[in-house]
Length: 175
Image (cartoon, rainbow, N blue to C red; front, side):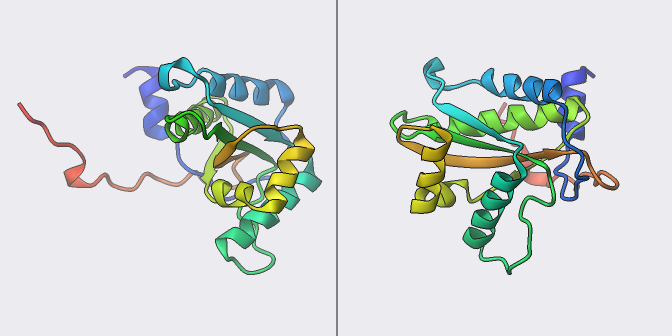
């Protein structure tokens, strides 16, 4: 089995992280992998915002917590020290798919480099709020973007979970 397929089969969502920061050279490799995700007609509609600043990370975590309707004190980022917000240009009809492929590349690259990851939803809801739009403006992001996901990254704090059994009706062959 190829290394790529092995990584696809062994990657798991991590929901408990150490506070150790990811070295910038490793983060840069993960981000670069995101830039090579397939996009509709090669239009490259997504953007990535890599957040390593703890204050900004915590502010975004609180915004996601509220959007999820979780109680105060819950960290929807599971303690991960790095968040990559993936957004995509709403004016390109494949933007959701494009951003989703970026998220997949980020998580697979992280796994290859020994970094845990998890896709956190509510990016769309967060960046549609006035507070979310203001945050993007503070980041220098201009345009008509839709939040696709938050890819949280860090070193796993504990055992990597086992894969759940695959459902029997996953694949249909038409021969």
